[in-house]
Picture (cartoon, rainbow, N blue to C red):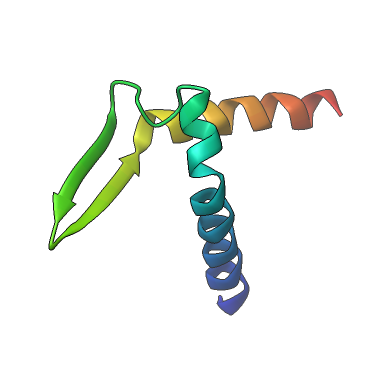
Length: 64
């Protein structure tokens, strides 16, 4: 259980660092990606972008 928590935490840290680069590619601005401001902070919930990235990674894994 603790391994999954660590993996999810590290994945979130990496994606957070890649967010500016991914926005230049258009990810994070798709229909289904939510962005709102709460308590003085911008929050992003990229649902559609996550589905697209998951499909691409799944396709790449099947190729390899």
